[in-house]
Length: 409
Image (tube, rainbow, N blue to C red; front, side):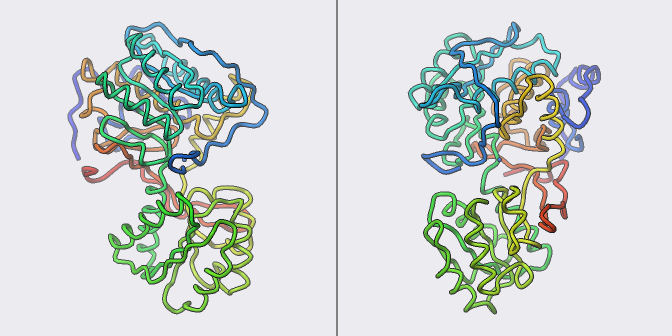
């Protein structure tokens, strides 16, 4: 899809160079103009938010980064029930890194602690708006995102949040995170391309499993795949469900298993015992399998899963550690990309910088974890790779796309 860029964008971007493999604010804006350029459980905790080992968080209820005219609110959980939060600190530090990388003097980032509660998120969002924030970045947890969105919507301000729970999305409430729906759709699309015709679903009886199952049914229909069997099991007790799958082995050529790595040990043993390892049938998982525990399981050798490509995060993590002396949380790139995007748009889009039409640009943007675009309903699409497990490692067998095709409707 061809897009026209506002006057002056290309010229301003030519003066800023992305750093190595890590794509910063300049390329975020560039991807929007040139498409070829260039990781929850609802109502509870969001998945994929592992805290970095050894990082010490220093809580500051109100902090500013920069002193530009455009105000941006950053709502993060700097404190939680047990004191300072290393995840919140990692998000704040990533924002500092994005600001430094951009060379920006255009924005002021208003950092607010949501105290890991919905009420705290509402108060922090209101405080940022009272101080002039034009857009809100964060929070992380779904219930907090909904409260922040409620406050921001009343003030007519958009939100770019980090929850992996798609129920937190809404008009003007955009999720930048890695959604289970995206993982599932990419995995089944690839399976169909590889000639798979019929996929059974083995899903835990929890919210993540329910979301993944719903998307699997939708995606299978879209790619002309049958779903002959659906087995749900109580978390940690998949034995009887796997036995039933084994008894109907001739009805499917793939099994989709949306399960976390730490629970896959039990699932893996049952699969092997029932002759359903990846040597006998193609196993497909989500980004939750991108974990050393899953990669070393015998039943999963040859299995496929979807995930963002690691090169961008690895480069970001190296530079983060050099600056802050600790490893970032895996979701720190979300804050980095959100701040980079806010800065890039402040430079290129004038008074419309955070409007719906700009944020939902169908050509999308390019960030540390690859290409992404926001949908009008607040969900997102991300460029994901497909990996195959083998020898205790994972190799890319289908690279992540570098641009989007279609209008994203």
